[in-house]
Image (cartoon, rainbow, N blue to C red; front, side, top):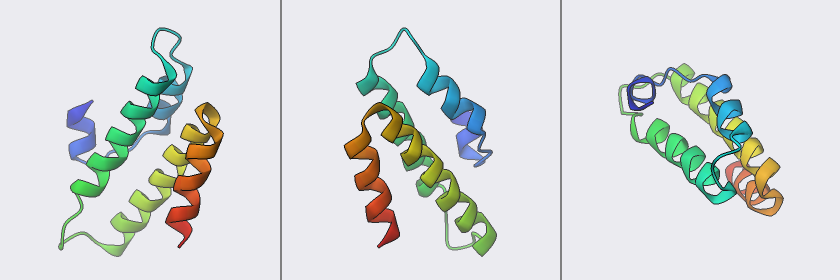
Length: 84
């Protein structure tokens, strides 16, 4: 998982798999999703293009929507904060 995140090779199927896990608790799912979001933003640099930055923002919104499926209020707060 780390390797694909280091190269910002985002895959929405990975997010959907995390949401569909039956063997882990909801809080662990949220933690994994936020970790992915964190790593994507940490790998952006001064040399990142506008296209890469927009892709990360779009991917981040997808993660926040996935979080809102688990914890509606938390996901909506993230989305509202991103819109500011």
